[in-house]
Length: 372
Image (cartoon, rainbow, N blue to C red; front, side, top):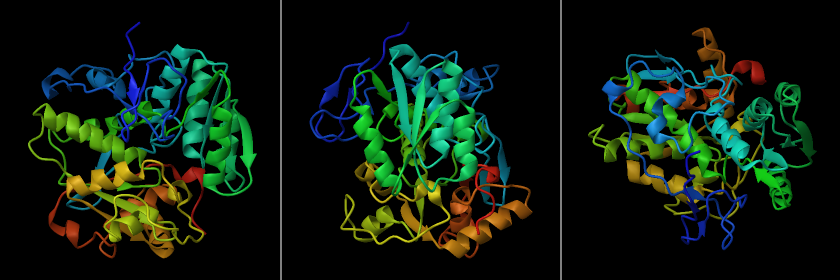
């Protein structure tokens, strides 16, 4: 069995030994990063490998686990002459969260905790529940009371225990973190646990392979907790450091205007969240986070890439979801956020008229239905 890398706190450098159930920095309580700097395999060596994210074995901190469901290698299809969509809703649990969830389940299977807990507004919970079922691990998922019924149904169908929490997504996270401090608990947090980011980074490794060893000029990413964006930044750094790409794409982050704490911090020129962000109901429940724990990392990643933050209205989200459906792509309303930003009438429309870009379609429409 291969050795696990240690974790460390990106803010104060505190180290957490490999194999520990410690889920956050013991000093400051912040999320952890992984002391892991792999070298990707060259394009020519990928031929004939498994048709899943495990084809990028050199870049993953764990070997292929028994709990894999063949996740990854999702299609890339054109939307316009310059913009393509990566269909990450075509995953085993119908969302991109499978990329990170399989890493968390594989890690938990090695550590053999008494139980696994997670918190989610839906998609991460369904993914963790599915992969824990595959790994035969007992699992409890903390969810806000207002979570989409179809997502709750899916979590329960996988055999996980549902723990409903009154209040918003932040209240749910607080309840889960309190339980995570109990003995024998593995906190399968898609925010705090860095293994999740090393799963989501395969999104960009696949793009690089599908585009013949290059990346688009712009990566447009929806941001709530920022796990896909930070995973993308990891992959871009790995490919660039290895000399496998000669330029880094700009990372453009999209939030719903109704809940946009990172966009507000960006507009203020801040390095972290600023003040109390006004919020309103939004159909983009998957990115409706007011206090993302990795805010500093997200803002820095976007800034260093030469990208920016953008917001989309509720009407733009609804229109984008219907527009994608008219093109044969039925995604949940959160999953339409990046297309809402990149369409001609979106905040990125003019910017991308002469630049290549890829947007992720992160979750299937069957999870939420059409936005009201």
